[in-house]
Amino acid sequence: MAKLWGGRFTKSTNKLVDAYTASITFDKELAQEDIEGSLAHVQMLGECGIVTPEEAQQIKGGLEAILERVKKGEVTFAVDQEDIHMNIESLLIQEIGPVGGKLHTGRSRNDQVATDMHLYLRRKTNGLIDLLEDVQYALLQQAKANVDTILPGYTHLQRAQPVSFAHHLLAYFWMFERDKGRLRDSFKRTNLLPLGAGALAGTTFPINRRRVAELLDFDDIYPNSMDAVSDRDFVVEALAACSLIMVHLSRLSEEMVLWSSQEFQFIELDDAFCTGSSIMPQKKNPDVSELLRGKTGRVFGHLIGLLTVLKGLPLAYNKDMQEDKEGIFDTVKTLEGALQLLAPILETMTVKKDRMRHAVEKDYSNATDIADYLARKGMPFREAHAVTGQMVLYAIEKHQYLLELSLDDFKRFSDLFEQDIFDALQPEQVMRARESEGGTAPHQIEKQLKLAELKLEQAD
Image (cartoon, rainbow, N blue to C red; front, side, top):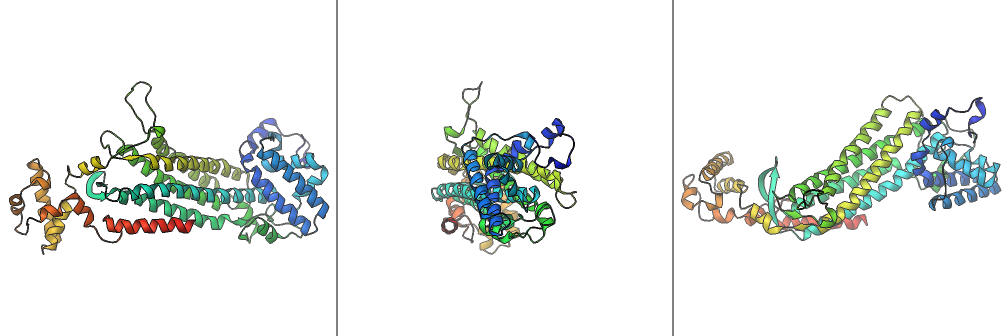
């Protein structure tokens, strides 16, 4: 099949070059976006008198027919037509004859592919936000059920202070809320129209770029034609936002792997989201959580890959920019799959409340409350900290936990201690005492829950 751009050439393209430079194997992902952009473009051409109304209608009908075939999976794309744009145009000419060749009037593949990518990322950004909200709903439901569930809070993976499990889960809710904010913010730059920029310098035809923006529901157009065809910042932003989402997914997945282990036993993951061993029949492996954690690396790689591609490119369009697609396509699919799995994993996990409560009885995570107790009675906090450290060492040497010490043991270190120290060190009281805004006290968690619900209602 002759190349649609082949008029200047005297030789056929080397088959190896065809195979190496063709992008149709992956940019066929943009078929619907390419046709959507073309439909708006040809409507504008007709309205501006660049093609006749009859020609515009004929081209529109041909494009709509191809779109239906694409949706039904009835189209086979040809490598020798290089990319999705040439494939669609070639199919159009086959469908309606030579008039199909008028579709490309006033545009270039450079502004066309940029438009396709904007349309693709605009659609996918909204989809990712919806999936993040599904995860937030799952976190919210588990949090509501576990306001009074106590587990050890950790720093440095060492027992730190008792916290509410709801408080721990809500930390991830707010991470994902920030992720949605980043996606929404990137949408502002994604929702700009490059079409009409031509190859790099605009076009001699009297087109109306703002009419195309209106038809495609873009907020604005690129004010500079060279920037319009060479900009891939919006793809980098999407990759960066997705990378941070994967960081948060990975951190939560890591905790689920730890919590479901024999050493922790804080939760049990549903059988539907675990796998077994081919040799050890007793095993129940959190493979899905591990893969959610592991796939982070490929998303990071796509971000670094595109940054590296772009860093030395002169204006305007260069073939290197073809490398923007596979990475973002894979990133979006990776993230969609991860989020679709995470919500039901969270919804179906069993929380072992008694095991969590037992864990905070067998550590020294209530030690800070001894220092706070002494500080409230007038001892300088730094001195109270030192006294408490000595008490912890004393308890360790006696092979006891702090609540197992007697009042006489406490008074060895300060006469400020009274019987009420034992109430202050109960895990429930340690949790309830943290009433500062944003703290782990149940009253503060209820405030968080209401705020979280409000965020999701506003999103709807």
